[in-house]
Length: 490
Image 1: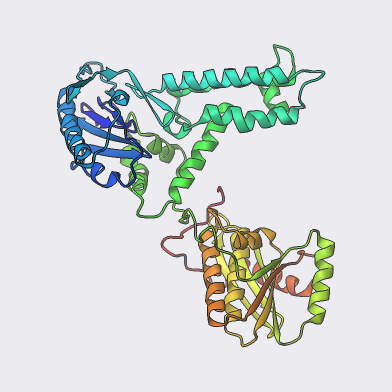
Image 2 (image 1 turned 45 degrees about the vertical axis):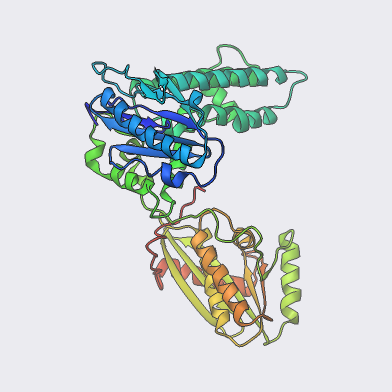
């Protein structure tokens, strides 16, 4: 992008070393407007973005004058659409900004649209992030520090040595209110492990604010070391807190569907040739310093069942181990051969993850190796074991079955599936259950929790089979293309 300049409508552009112009247009809440407006840009050097009732255009080129001319053409088409559909754009909210770090390029070109002149601004705010011309985010950092200072003063007003709120509640205020406000959109403006001036200044300013807040919370001496304060409050240093949040954001990006446009930028960030640039993008910076966090992960979609859906099978979870063990003994003593009894378990041992089920009714054992513990986890093994059990039940003639698992987390995730790790396995289990009830509507399936390692024979046999699968790599699972690895960070 060097020696180029760009402009955009909507502040979500982050080309470096280029003058970029962005205009924000307020649109009065029309639904279905984006299809045409977002299709106006036709070149690779053009960009369109939309969020709720705003639309933004971006243009990249050699000069700011050329960019403004192309941007005016786009705006003219948008105005044509507006007149045709009787819509209104709030021109008072238009913002134009040139992004560049090249001080030799002029950034004073303005835009004129239907008699309204839009002069360039030094900074622009989009979705709560303040973008400045050189994209060093100093204005945004200062704003975040100001917010943190204000919240710190608010915490200080209720933190008193004799009558103030207890430390645990003050900590909760900081972690749930102050830190999220300061760290908002950190993936945009912060670069972990970057030792250049903007990043170092951000960390220093945030550390100063956090230190003042910790001193207020603890009521300690003014000269108390920052390390001691962080140890007493159990707060992470700002650089580690920001890094953690940014890596979580990247993890969520990696779990997006393969057709999502972000994946092309993720693939580009992994390319070593982009990591050698003097000013890499934030995503390239993550790929450079944290390559272990950029591998493919399972796809996690927003939902796999609608809100009104309910699980056809029943789930039974007792309040404690003693009650669960007693309920299991009472239930199994009353069952006969007309009811299938299956025990499932997942296990992690010798850096491997295994899953297994043991059917007490026909003495059938089935095992599966899920991979290394760097690729999967025990929770996935528990889910996979339940999936094996449900699949086995479908092949039997009985009309009632009990599946006993020692994982409450796996069972609860089946009752209320959400955007979470192991979602692909959960979907396969629910699909199997739905197919079972569709074929046999009167079927009775119950998943019951049993405590592990308390001497329940079926659970112990399932546990041994799962360990054996992990150690001997029995029946290794072949990962689907869209579900390569299990993410444990959601």
